[in-house]
Length: 377
View (cartoon, rainbow, N blue to C red):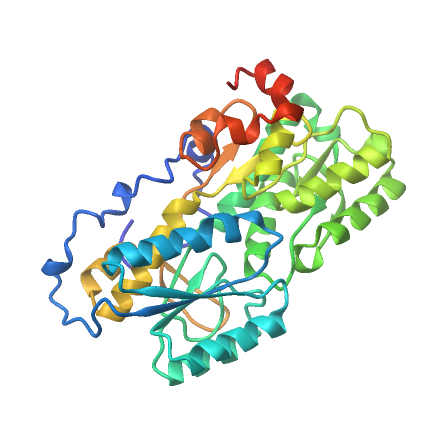
């Protein structure tokens, strides 16, 4: 990519994303590992004794506690010879709590803040307070408003495109007459609009979208209630597929369909590659999930935070060769990591190959027969 050119968010890489196995542990593509800190012409502002503030949004999304936090913590320690530390807080789906946690990190004088914002607009005033206090802020996974210094996430419109295209391809020749329910995410999350936009680009004109719902705080309980409403309105036998923006909601959608008496599930999408979602895919209940390589996103976020604090501009710039715009700021230095669709056909070549899960993790007694049926052993 050209350095600092505006990223359109709608890059058409579906063929690559659907077919490729992205190795989350291989960071060579970022062009950073070959650059040594000693080559930087910048004078470091701080040494290794730094504190990175990490604010994550919820515990319902399994990846945040299981992967993102420990990966960032491990990388910060590795980059600072064990001297750097991570001050961590989880908002547990409360924007007010996240704001308080943000203020506490400002009061604690952390050196840099990584923020996965629950409410992109509401957090802007906190970002400004950090800026006024001389603390750089990097938006992580979700693009926040306010004067942020950088952004690391995935190509979120591509996530929706991959989900939508997966449904259309699975429906095949029946797509044109298929009724599809859309279960979108939390409208306060800036990624939701990107996911939705990408999915609609692929679904509209190909299928009939009969119901569309936004889901407050990505709540599975809200998603289940909305799915029950859709079933009552459309008729359970008339629903050919469900676009679910993430795995937590996908599980709730599938539960609602089961409660309505469905034995053969229509294709249901997801996102995040949660373990229970992978198991549902093995069992044939959920059609696909979008795997967003956690290791690459988390590891590079840690690098960006450390490099920013230490004034290592060459390394920082190498990690932020994309550019995005929020509702309050243009040309934000960014890194957008590619994504891949996971179905029964490529579980072994994605989440297992990348060390996210082992076969033993997935193929518990409940799923042993399903695993054997697809050759997962």
